[in-house]
Length: 447
Ligand code: SAH
Ligand code: SF4
Ligand code: F3S
Image 1 (spheres, helix red, strand yellow):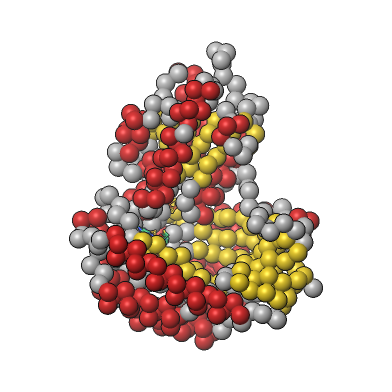
Image 2 (cartoon, protein in one colour; image 1 turned 135 degrees about the horizontal axis):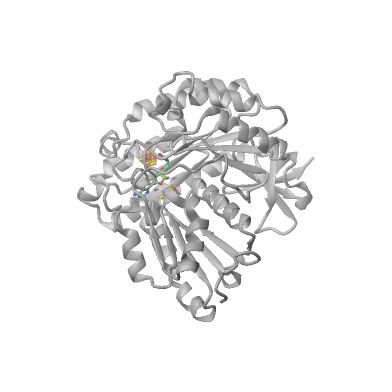
């Protein structure tokens, strides 16, 4: 290595774990590295800089990341100049960065979630001073969305942050600890970004926040709120779709449903995590709504938008959850009939309130998740049959990785559909008539 290490012309690889928010942050990491003159490669083996953008929502997410970071030890023996960076939610946990620095000697730079925009400086500092760096801030950071370069990887969709952080402190959740308090971007900044994206040819915008419904609350101005933001984005000219996630049942209002109805661009697809169907579990989780309130929201959505696709997140095995509580969850799932549900086994997160509650044996958790998944699969399959013979407008997102010669995309309500076609169709709206269904998978013909 020469005295002055030149990043220009080198290769990088970003390995991402976790939610859409993290996917989008990886696009900003890529933007920063591209700006330094580097090029993206798909595998760590071909890279000079590997960045792990980590997640710690569950133990499994953390172990997967640590396992792959561990593999860098061997890679570094082969390539002495390899630089390994670890950032994201995992490193932001209390005491984690110091521990990682000590135990993983081959990790060169550790950054938290609040100073990712410092990546270039820290990389240059590392090579100039030949010293490993761990830099994690306690104060809420702010990614400057106006100036941070972004290399988007999800065309025809574009992710757009509307608020960062979370104030809700659900007792199981690590996010408020690793992402800080809720901070909203200004409507002007969000709309300007969306206008540019549509001009650049993106066909779908997904607005992101841990709780989109509390967007703007930190401004204290009633005119800045989520449903008005939706309406403003929908006023941008052009044919495109608007999606958003995640909605929180305690803050979700009928005004959002009215906004969806007011514009063809805003998709009738609502991700509304319920977590549990039992009031006592919801209370222990500090979710601040009841089962009855949740059901009333579902009724309201279905009254106004009968064909809305409603999806959810559900957790089983939370502390104190009895078989009766679990039956309440199954009952709610039967009543709502979600189009799809993301199901999780509760995982203890150090530093959260629920970590100090009495834990349920793993076998019980496993038995419950199996029963929950079986029920939801049954429902998804029944709902799939209703699509047969009908035609839907689909935005083609990509080629189908599992089925050669097929492309896939989503209906407005969010259901994944595939049909014969090639990559020239990516980014196009087409009409697909559904003629086959297997479990959650819908297949058809472009007409
Ligand atoms: N802000 C969103 C999503 C948070 S994380 C919301 O409020 O819904 C995504 C999902 O992960 C959550 O909805 C929850 O179902 C799950 N999750 C969060 N913490 C978890 C934990 N400790 N164990 C298991 N699942 C968890
Ligand atoms: Fe976690 Fe609850 Fe915040 Fe969602 S709303 S990020 S589940 S604390
Ligand atoms: Fe997302 Fe995981 Fe962090 S779900 S916010 S990347 S803990």
